Length: 331
Image (cartoon, rainbow, N blue to C red):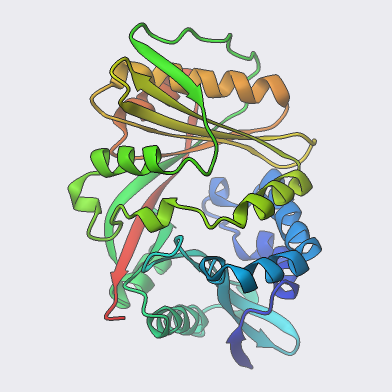
C-alpha cells in the first residue's frame, strides 16, 4: 500500500473507471453518479490525455496554470483505492478540493483521512491560505471527517436539475436593462460585480480577488481547444442597468454531442430580483436550442434567493444541498 501524488494524465483515466462505484450511495440513489455525468467525466479525462503535451508546454511558459490540477492517490496491489483532486483558484492563495473518493472495497481504514491530510500538507507547502470543498448535506461520515480536520461550514448551494419536455420561448428582457455577450477574458466587470455583491461573511474563506478572475494570456490558446475537443458550446453574457452598471453575469455550457450534461450558472445582484426569471429562461432557451435531449444542471448559491426561486418556477428539481466547507491555513 502507498500514497503518492497524482500522475497526470494517466491517473485521471483510472479514476474515471471507478467513479461510479466510488460515489455510490445505496441509501440516497439521487446522489449517485448518473450515466450522463459519467459521460461528461470520461469526455473531460480523455481530452486531458489527448492534449496533455500542449497543456504541459503552456504551463512551462505560464506559471499561473501550473497549479490548476494536483492530487493524491492511495494505491494497493495495482488498484486505486482512493484519491483526491485539488487545484489553485487562479493565482490566488485559495485552493479547492474538487474530489475525494475511496472505493467501497477499501473503506473504514482511515484512507480518506490520510488523503485529505496529504492534500492539506500539499497546499501548505505551496503557501496556500485556504482550502475549500463541497460535501452533500446528509453525508455524515464525510462531515465527521472534515469537522475532525478543522473544516468549517460557511455557506451552501442548491444542486438543481431539469430535463424540459417543452423548450421555453425566447424571453423578453425587462425594460431598463441591456444585454451584451462577453467572453472568459473580459474579467474586470465580473470581478467588480462579485466584489460588490458577495456577502461579507463569505469573504473570510472566499475573498474576491483579481487573481481569481484574470486569466493567463495563454489560456486563450488552451481553453478553446479543450472546449472543442469536449464538444461544448459556451455562451456568456452580462446584463447592465441603463447607467452602465453590470448587475448580472451568466454562463451556459451546451453539449454539441449526444453525451454528458448541459450546465447553466448565473450571478445576480440581489437588488435586481426581477431579472432572475429572465436569466433562467434565457439560458434554458439558448441551451435547448442547441441540445434539447440532455439534462441541464444548475448550482445556485443559497444567498441567491431570487435565482433559486426562478429556477424552481421554471421546473428545476432539487437533487442535493451542498455544504461548502473551508479550512484556514498558516501557509
